[in-house]
View 1 (cartoon, rainbow, N blue to C red):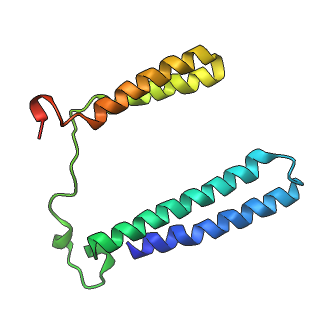
View 2 (view 1 turned 90 degrees about the vertical axis):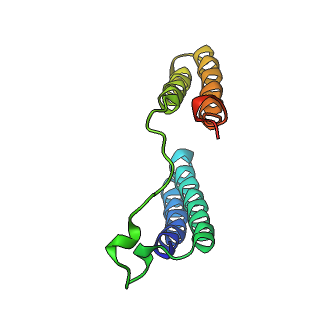
Length: 133
């Protein structure tokens, strides 16, 4: 994960520099642009830190080595639940929350309630029922 870590670590100063240049050009009067670029730089730092931390914990992957063979990347790639309906419910609940920002605050509160229910359901999906571990 060295390449991914370097990529995001080098993108962060770029976003901070572009955000500063943008702020100077608009004379700091339009806060959405430079603030969004600063937040994007912060997000790049967080992703780069996570990838670096995970890369040290997991070790070298086959795609990180020049002498790796194709068959080394085969096998189980993670745990996915293709039958889960919780991501759909969570997405619809979040969409209702964002609709509430545009249409009315009362919709936001309803969407927030459904979002909490969907998030808890998704997190604890394997703690109960037929697929409990």
